Length: 354
Image (cartoon, rainbow, N blue to C red; front, side, top):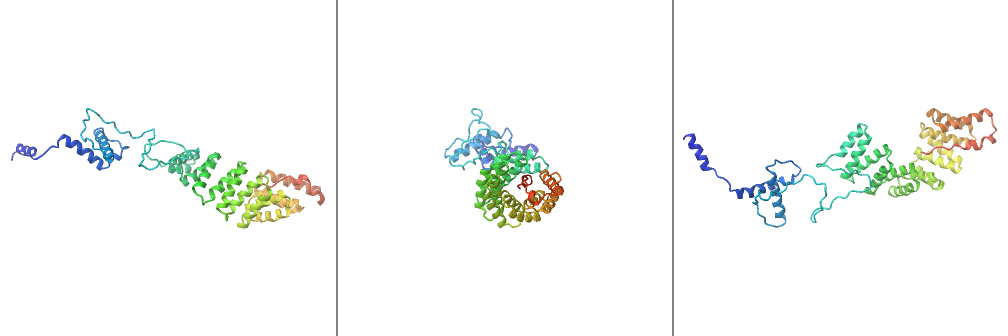
Protein backbone atom coordinates (compact mmCIF):
# COMPACT_ATOMS: atom_id res chain seq x y z
CA UNK A 1 0.00 0.00 0.00
CA UNK A 2 1.42 3.40 -0.99
CA UNK A 3 1.96 6.23 1.54
CA UNK A 4 -0.88 8.08 -0.09
CA UNK A 5 -3.17 5.12 0.52
CA UNK A 6 -2.17 4.90 4.24
CA UNK A 7 -2.81 8.58 4.78
CA UNK A 8 -6.20 8.21 3.21
CA UNK A 9 -7.06 5.25 5.43
CA UNK A 10 -6.28 7.26 8.59
CA UNK A 11 -8.71 9.91 7.54
CA UNK A 12 -11.27 7.27 6.86
CA UNK A 13 -10.87 5.48 10.23
CA UNK A 14 -10.66 8.63 12.46
CA UNK A 15 -13.57 10.71 13.72
CA UNK A 16 -14.17 14.25 14.98
CA UNK A 17 -16.44 15.24 17.89
CA UNK A 18 -19.18 17.63 17.06
CA UNK A 19 -18.51 21.14 18.44
CA UNK A 20 -21.53 21.03 20.74
CA UNK A 21 -20.49 17.72 22.31
CA UNK A 22 -16.89 18.91 22.70
CA UNK A 23 -18.04 21.99 24.59
CA UNK A 24 -20.10 19.83 26.92
CA UNK A 25 -17.45 17.18 27.65
CA UNK A 26 -14.36 19.28 28.28
CA UNK A 27 -15.74 21.36 31.21
CA UNK A 28 -17.20 18.23 32.78
CA UNK A 29 -13.83 16.48 32.60
CA UNK A 30 -12.09 19.47 34.13
CA UNK A 31 -14.58 19.54 36.99
CA UNK A 32 -14.16 15.80 37.54
CA UNK A 33 -10.40 16.19 37.74
CA UNK A 34 -10.79 18.84 40.45
CA UNK A 35 -9.19 21.65 38.46
CA UNK A 36 -12.00 24.00 39.42
CA UNK A 37 -10.74 24.04 43.02
CA UNK A 38 -7.29 25.32 42.02
CA UNK A 39 -8.22 28.92 41.39
CA UNK A 40 -4.88 30.14 42.78
CA UNK A 41 -2.91 28.13 40.17
CA UNK A 42 -2.13 30.18 37.04
CA UNK A 43 -3.60 28.49 33.96
CA UNK A 44 -2.94 29.06 30.26
CA UNK A 45 -5.24 31.62 28.72
CA UNK A 46 -6.77 28.98 26.45
CA UNK A 47 -8.05 26.95 29.40
CA UNK A 48 -9.51 29.78 31.43
CA UNK A 49 -12.88 29.93 29.59
CA UNK A 50 -13.27 26.16 30.00
CA UNK A 51 -12.47 26.42 33.71
CA UNK A 52 -15.02 29.20 34.16
CA UNK A 53 -17.64 27.16 32.34
CA UNK A 54 -16.91 24.11 34.51
CA UNK A 55 -17.37 26.17 37.65
CA UNK A 56 -20.65 27.56 36.35
CA UNK A 57 -21.85 24.06 35.56
CA UNK A 58 -20.86 22.74 39.00
CA UNK A 59 -22.69 25.58 40.78
CA UNK A 60 -25.78 25.05 38.68
CA UNK A 61 -25.71 21.31 39.24
CA UNK A 62 -25.46 21.78 43.03
CA UNK A 63 -28.43 24.13 42.90
CA UNK A 64 -30.47 21.63 40.86
CA UNK A 65 -30.62 23.89 37.79
CA UNK A 66 -30.22 22.53 34.27
CA UNK A 67 -28.09 24.82 32.16
CA UNK A 68 -26.96 24.86 28.58
CA UNK A 69 -23.44 23.42 28.45
CA UNK A 70 -22.67 24.89 25.07
CA UNK A 71 -22.64 28.68 25.34
CA UNK A 72 -21.16 30.76 22.58
CA UNK A 73 -18.05 32.40 24.10
CA UNK A 74 -17.80 34.89 21.29
CA UNK A 75 -21.17 36.35 22.23
CA UNK A 76 -20.98 36.26 26.05
CA UNK A 77 -17.44 35.73 27.41
CA UNK A 78 -17.27 34.62 31.04
CA UNK A 79 -15.06 36.50 33.53
CA UNK A 80 -11.78 34.92 34.55
CA UNK A 81 -11.88 33.88 38.24
CA UNK A 82 -9.73 36.12 40.42
CA UNK A 83 -6.99 34.49 42.50
CA UNK A 84 -7.66 36.74 45.52
CA UNK A 85 -10.37 39.12 46.58
CA UNK A 86 -9.68 41.97 49.00
CA UNK A 87 -13.33 42.12 50.00
CA UNK A 88 -14.42 39.21 52.19
CA UNK A 89 -17.42 37.27 51.00
CA UNK A 90 -20.41 36.53 53.15
CA UNK A 91 -20.47 32.89 54.27
CA UNK A 92 -23.10 30.71 52.71
CA UNK A 93 -25.82 29.26 54.89
CA UNK A 94 -24.55 25.74 54.27
CA UNK A 95 -20.86 26.54 54.82
CA UNK A 96 -18.89 26.45 58.09
CA UNK A 97 -18.89 29.43 60.40
CA UNK A 98 -16.00 31.82 59.74
CA UNK A 99 -13.10 32.02 62.20
CA UNK A 100 -13.40 35.30 64.08
CA UNK A 101 -10.11 36.94 64.98
CA UNK A 102 -9.73 38.45 68.44
CA UNK A 103 -9.60 42.22 68.18
CA UNK A 104 -7.18 42.99 71.00
CA UNK A 105 -4.26 44.58 69.20
CA UNK A 106 -2.05 41.50 69.44
CA UNK A 107 -2.61 40.06 65.97
CA UNK A 108 -1.07 41.84 63.00
CA UNK A 109 -3.31 41.72 59.94
CA UNK A 110 -1.85 40.75 56.59
CA UNK A 111 -2.89 39.30 53.24
CA UNK A 112 -1.36 36.50 51.21
CA UNK A 113 -2.43 34.61 48.11
CA UNK A 114 -1.19 31.40 49.75
CA UNK A 115 -0.47 30.27 53.29
CA UNK A 116 2.84 31.33 54.88
CA UNK A 117 4.50 29.75 57.92
CA UNK A 118 4.88 32.94 59.96
CA UNK A 119 5.61 31.02 63.15
CA UNK A 120 8.52 29.25 61.47
CA UNK A 121 9.81 32.60 60.27
CA UNK A 122 9.54 33.96 63.81
CA UNK A 123 11.63 31.09 65.19
CA UNK A 124 14.33 31.63 62.57
CA UNK A 125 14.48 35.38 63.18
CA UNK A 126 14.63 34.83 66.95
CA UNK A 127 17.61 32.53 66.53
CA UNK A 128 19.30 35.20 64.43
CA UNK A 129 18.73 37.77 67.17
CA UNK A 130 16.12 39.79 65.30
CA UNK A 131 13.63 40.17 68.14
CA UNK A 132 11.61 42.90 66.42
CA UNK A 133 11.24 40.92 63.20
CA UNK A 134 10.37 37.77 65.13
CA UNK A 135 7.66 39.61 67.04
CA UNK A 136 6.18 40.91 63.79
CA UNK A 137 6.06 37.43 62.29
CA UNK A 138 4.54 35.80 65.36
CA UNK A 139 1.84 38.48 65.46
CA UNK A 140 1.05 37.64 61.83
CA UNK A 141 0.85 33.99 62.84
CA UNK A 142 -1.69 34.95 65.50
CA UNK A 143 -3.73 36.73 62.85
CA UNK A 144 -3.98 33.39 61.03
CA UNK A 145 -4.60 31.36 64.19
CA UNK A 146 -5.48 33.38 67.33
CA UNK A 147 -5.63 30.27 69.54
CA UNK A 148 -2.11 28.98 68.82
CA UNK A 149 -0.65 28.69 72.34
CA UNK A 150 2.91 28.26 71.07
CA UNK A 151 2.63 31.51 69.15
CA UNK A 152 1.08 33.23 72.16
CA UNK A 153 3.92 32.08 74.42
CA UNK A 154 6.51 33.33 71.95
CA UNK A 155 4.66 36.61 71.48
CA UNK A 156 4.60 37.24 75.24
CA UNK A 157 8.32 36.61 75.62
CA UNK A 158 9.31 38.66 72.58
CA UNK A 159 7.03 41.51 73.59
CA UNK A 160 8.67 41.65 77.02
CA UNK A 161 12.11 41.70 75.41
CA UNK A 162 10.96 44.58 73.24
CA UNK A 163 9.49 46.44 76.22
CA UNK A 164 5.94 46.10 74.87
CA UNK A 165 4.34 45.11 78.15
CA UNK A 166 0.75 45.63 77.02
CA UNK A 167 1.15 43.12 74.19
CA UNK A 168 2.65 40.62 76.63
CA UNK A 169 -0.27 41.11 79.03
CA UNK A 170 -2.76 40.47 76.23
CA UNK A 171 -0.92 37.29 75.23
CA UNK A 172 -0.87 35.99 78.81
CA UNK A 173 -4.55 36.83 79.29
CA UNK A 174 -5.54 35.00 76.11
CA UNK A 175 -3.51 31.94 77.11
CA UNK A 176 -5.23 31.99 80.46
CA UNK A 177 -8.64 31.97 78.80
CA UNK A 178 -7.66 29.25 76.32
CA UNK A 179 -6.30 26.99 79.07
CA UNK A 180 -8.78 27.31 81.94
CA UNK A 181 -7.09 24.54 83.94
CA UNK A 182 -3.58 26.02 83.74
CA UNK A 183 -2.16 28.71 86.03
CA UNK A 184 1.29 29.37 84.55
CA UNK A 185 0.16 32.08 82.13
CA UNK A 186 -1.77 33.86 84.88
CA UNK A 187 1.26 33.74 87.17
CA UNK A 188 3.39 35.35 84.47
CA UNK A 189 0.69 37.95 83.87
CA UNK A 190 0.53 38.76 87.59
CA UNK A 191 4.33 39.11 87.80
CA UNK A 192 4.33 41.55 84.92
CA UNK A 193 1.50 43.53 86.49
CA UNK A 194 3.48 43.80 89.73
CA UNK A 195 6.51 45.10 87.86
CA UNK A 196 4.28 47.69 86.18
CA UNK A 197 2.88 48.85 89.53
CA UNK A 198 -0.63 47.61 88.76
CA UNK A 199 -0.98 45.86 92.08
CA UNK A 200 -4.77 45.58 92.29
CA UNK A 201 -4.89 43.83 88.92
CA UNK A 202 -2.01 41.60 89.99
CA UNK A 203 -3.93 40.54 93.09
CA UNK A 204 -7.00 39.70 91.02
CA UNK A 205 -5.04 37.64 88.51
CA UNK A 206 -2.98 36.00 91.25
CA UNK A 207 -6.08 34.95 93.13
CA UNK A 208 -7.38 33.23 90.00
CA UNK A 209 -4.03 31.47 89.59
CA UNK A 210 -4.21 30.16 93.16
CA UNK A 211 -7.74 28.84 92.56
CA UNK A 212 -6.56 26.98 89.48
CA UNK A 213 -3.37 25.60 91.02
CA UNK A 214 -3.64 25.58 94.84
CA UNK A 215 -0.48 23.45 95.15
CA UNK A 216 1.73 25.79 93.09
CA UNK A 217 3.97 27.89 95.35
CA UNK A 218 4.55 30.47 92.61
CA UNK A 219 0.92 31.61 92.73
CA UNK A 220 1.20 32.46 96.44
CA UNK A 221 4.61 34.02 95.85
CA UNK A 222 3.34 36.48 93.27
CA UNK A 223 0.26 37.23 95.37
CA UNK A 224 2.51 38.06 98.30
CA UNK A 225 4.55 40.40 96.14
CA UNK A 226 1.43 42.20 94.97
CA UNK A 227 0.16 42.67 98.54
CA UNK A 228 3.58 43.73 99.80
CA UNK A 229 4.01 46.31 97.04
CA UNK A 230 0.61 47.71 98.04
CA UNK A 231 1.70 47.99 101.69
CA UNK A 232 -0.63 45.21 102.80
CA UNK A 233 1.71 43.41 105.19
CA UNK A 234 -0.64 40.87 106.77
CA UNK A 235 -1.89 39.26 103.53
CA UNK A 236 1.63 39.48 102.10
CA UNK A 237 3.10 37.55 105.04
CA UNK A 238 0.30 34.98 104.81
CA UNK A 239 0.88 34.37 101.10
CA UNK A 240 4.65 34.07 101.52
CA UNK A 241 4.13 31.64 104.39
CA UNK A 242 1.88 29.53 102.18
CA UNK A 243 4.51 29.52 99.43
CA UNK A 244 7.23 28.43 101.86
CA UNK A 245 4.94 25.77 103.30
CA UNK A 246 4.42 24.28 99.83
CA UNK A 247 8.09 24.63 98.90
CA UNK A 248 10.32 24.92 102.00
CA UNK A 249 13.48 25.45 99.93
CA UNK A 250 12.06 28.28 97.84
CA UNK A 251 14.85 30.76 98.49
CA UNK A 252 13.12 33.74 96.93
CA UNK A 253 9.92 33.16 98.85
CA UNK A 254 11.99 32.99 102.05
CA UNK A 255 13.73 36.24 101.15
CA UNK A 256 10.44 37.99 100.49
CA UNK A 257 8.94 36.62 103.71
CA UNK A 258 11.94 38.00 105.59
CA UNK A 259 11.48 41.34 103.86
CA UNK A 260 7.84 41.42 104.94
CA UNK A 261 8.82 40.54 108.51
CA UNK A 262 11.30 43.43 108.53
CA UNK A 263 8.61 45.78 107.30
CA UNK A 264 6.35 44.54 110.09
CA UNK A 265 9.08 44.99 112.72
CA UNK A 266 9.40 41.26 113.43
CA UNK A 267 13.19 41.23 113.26
CA UNK A 268 13.82 37.87 114.91
CA UNK A 269 11.56 36.05 112.48
CA UNK A 270 13.14 37.99 109.64
CA UNK A 271 16.67 36.94 110.66
CA UNK A 272 15.62 33.30 110.87
CA UNK A 273 14.06 33.03 107.41
CA UNK A 274 16.70 35.27 105.78
CA UNK A 275 19.47 33.07 107.11
CA UNK A 276 17.80 30.11 105.41
CA UNK A 277 17.38 32.14 102.23
CA UNK A 278 21.10 33.06 102.25
CA UNK A 279 22.02 29.38 102.52
CA UNK A 280 19.80 28.51 99.56
CA UNK A 281 20.87 31.53 97.48
CA UNK A 282 24.54 32.04 98.41
CA UNK A 283 25.28 34.00 95.24
CA UNK A 284 22.40 36.52 95.46
CA UNK A 285 23.74 39.77 96.88
CA UNK A 286 20.50 41.35 98.03
CA UNK A 287 19.60 38.32 100.16
CA UNK A 288 22.82 38.83 102.17
CA UNK A 289 22.06 42.55 102.39
CA UNK A 290 18.61 41.78 103.77
CA UNK A 291 20.11 39.41 106.32
CA UNK A 292 22.58 42.11 107.31
CA UNK A 293 19.70 44.49 108.00
CA UNK A 294 18.06 41.90 110.24
CA UNK A 295 21.28 41.26 112.17
CA UNK A 296 21.88 44.99 112.53
CA UNK A 297 18.44 45.56 113.96
CA UNK A 298 19.02 42.79 116.48
CA UNK A 299 22.30 44.40 117.55
CA UNK A 300 24.46 41.61 116.15
CA UNK A 301 26.95 43.92 114.50
CA UNK A 302 29.60 41.37 113.59
CA UNK A 303 27.09 39.20 111.75
CA UNK A 304 25.70 42.29 110.05
CA UNK A 305 29.14 43.41 108.86
CA UNK A 306 29.84 39.91 107.58
CA UNK A 307 26.56 39.79 105.63
CA UNK A 308 27.19 43.24 104.12
CA UNK A 309 30.75 42.28 103.19
CA UNK A 310 29.51 39.14 101.44
CA UNK A 311 26.91 41.14 99.50
CA UNK A 312 29.59 43.66 98.49
CA UNK A 313 31.87 40.90 97.20
CA UNK A 314 29.04 39.44 95.16
CA UNK A 315 27.97 42.80 93.71
CA UNK A 316 30.57 45.58 94.08
CA UNK A 317 28.27 48.11 92.40
CA UNK A 318 25.34 47.36 94.70
CA UNK A 319 24.75 50.87 96.08
CA UNK A 320 22.41 49.94 98.94
CA UNK A 321 24.74 47.41 100.49
CA UNK A 322 27.69 49.78 100.18
CA UNK A 323 25.74 52.39 102.13
CA UNK A 324 24.94 49.81 104.80
CA UNK A 325 28.53 48.54 104.97
CA UNK A 326 29.97 52.06 105.25
CA UNK A 327 27.59 52.89 108.06
CA UNK A 328 28.54 49.75 109.97
CA UNK A 329 32.23 50.55 109.54
CA UNK A 330 31.68 54.02 110.97
CA UNK A 331 29.82 52.50 113.89
CA UNK A 332 32.69 50.08 114.51
CA UNK A 333 35.28 52.87 114.46
CA UNK A 334 33.29 55.04 116.80
CA UNK A 335 32.80 52.07 119.13
CA UNK A 336 29.25 53.08 119.91
CA UNK A 337 27.43 51.60 122.83
CA UNK A 338 24.87 48.89 122.04
CA UNK A 339 22.09 51.22 123.09
CA UNK A 340 23.17 53.72 120.45
CA UNK A 341 23.41 51.25 117.65
CA UNK A 342 19.70 51.27 116.82
CA UNK A 343 19.58 54.78 115.42
CA UNK A 344 17.17 55.92 112.70
CA UNK A 345 20.11 55.96 110.29
CA UNK A 346 20.83 52.29 110.94
CA UNK A 347 17.21 51.33 110.32
CA UNK A 348 16.69 53.40 107.18
CA UNK A 349 18.02 50.91 104.56
CA UNK A 350 15.37 48.45 103.48
CA UNK A 351 16.09 45.14 101.78
CA UNK A 352 15.11 44.62 98.20
CA UNK A 353 12.15 42.65 96.92
CA UNK A 354 12.59 39.87 94.37
